[in-house]
Image (cartoon, rainbow, N blue to C red):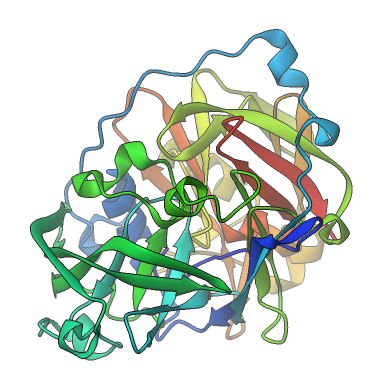
Length: 411
C-alpha cells in the first residue's frame, strides 16, 4: 500500500441515488523503492520480506481470523447473472505513474479535505491529527477537530503495532463525505504518532479500509458498513476499476458496478474467511510451467502495487524470468526482454487470469523491475497479496452479501 497504492473504479448501472462512484487519482512515490512497499506489506499482513535491512523488522501485527469458510459446489458456480447490481455512487480515483492511487474525502463541518487510499486490505479509517508531530504527519494534511462543529469526542485509544513501528492515536467521530455520500457520526482514528518511514513518502494522507469489520482495530465500524446500515446503497457491494494513466486513474463505485468497464461476465470466487478479501488460489503458472498450490489464499488488495508471494516461489520466478537482484534488493530484468517474457497466470475457482510480461514488470525511470515481492507470512498457510499490477488488468467486485469477489477482464 505504501510506495505504491491502488484504488479502483466503479460505474453505476441502476439506482444512481444509491450508488456512489469515486474517481481515483494516481500519485507518484517520492522515491521509487519497492523495498518501502515491502516494509509496509510486512507490517500490514504480519509478514517478513526478503529485505530485512529495510526496517520491516519482525513480524507485523497479529490479526485473529476465523477459520476458513466452507462453500458447497453450487456456490462455486456463481456468475454475473447471480450478482449484477447496476447503479452506484461513483468516487474518482487519482493515479500517478501507476504508483499510488487515492481518492478524496472530507471530514467535519465545514469539510476538511484529505487524500486516502481506498484499501481492501484493511478495515479502519485513519487520518493524521493536528496533534501529531511525527515527520509523516508534518508532510500531510491533518484533521483539526476544533475547526469542526460536528466533531464528537470518543477518546478511546487507537494503536496498530507493527514490527518496526506503529500508528497511534485516538478515536473521534465526525461527518464523512466520500463521493456524493455523506455519513454522519462516523468513528475514525486521529493519528497522533506515525513511527518509521512507511508513511513518510506516501502522497496520500490516510487510509480508508474496505476489508471485513472482523479485523477493524477497536471494533470500529468501517465506513462501507455505515453505508449499508444506513441504507445509502441498494446492494452491499463495491467495485474497482484501476486506470493506467494520470488522465484516467479509475473509479470506485459503492453500491453497484459498471458493466461498461469489463468484458464478458463477472466470475465470482467465495472468500476463504471474513477478514481480508481473500480467495482460494488453486495454482499459478509461468508459461507452460504450472505450480499446483495447497491451502493457498490470495488477498485482493487495492492498497498495494505489487504481488507478494512466498519467498521461495518468488526466487524461482525471478530465476526463470532472468531477473537479477540489485544492491537495494529489487529484482530487475533487461528491458529489451520484457515483451518476450512468459505469461504469468493465476487460477481462481477454475478460471485462469493471465498477466503479460509488460504487466508484471514495471518500468520506473528506465529500469525494469519485477512486481513479484518475496514475503513469508506465518499464518500456517500460504498467503499471496495481489495488488495493482493485477487490478489494472481485471475489474473487481467485492460483495459483502454473498461473501465473494467478482473478476472480469477490464476494458
